[in-house]
Image (cartoon, rainbow, N blue to C red; front, side, top):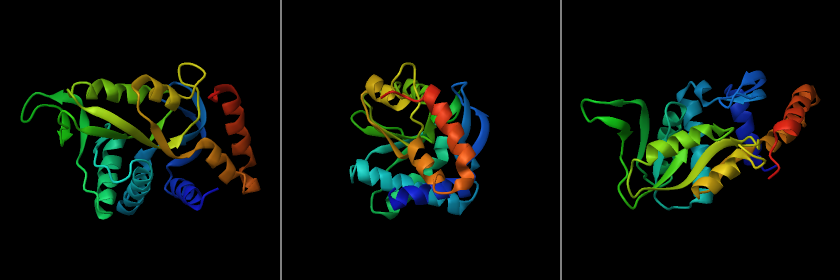
Length: 218
């Protein structure tokens, strides 16, 4: 496994973002592990998370300037921290996020921050995609921005789960909307990491059993 992947998984586990147990995903599925960016609680942690996203951005997008969009609520801090990390590495990008409910006074609308203009490209930053529900909600919001194109989405972990069909939710999103979805690590990286310590045998077995039922075929 590449060293940065191990470092990232260790970071997620140490920060309490990656947990093992019995959880219910937004999709309604009962899952044996959970990824929750809402458990990032300190300045140091959110700064480190932003650095991982910035690294992924440079690796996949390069120095191309896009507008970062962080869906409320967890995506907000990710977008801010990623924008800061990109800026520290010489790429100053604007960012924005949405309100859960439209504001009918002041500046109004559902967006806060920089509002992209026609011809500009947006990169969505999320914590995780399970069934693609949250991304479809984001695309519905972003469709109000005429002439704005979503160029890519970045997430922390590719869960490698089925979406609506046999393909992974990430592959379905890419097919449906025509942009790539990138992740820093995937669930098989997490399994490989866990298998390095025998005490993780139970969690490894539970995740593998879950994937045997819900894992994507492509």
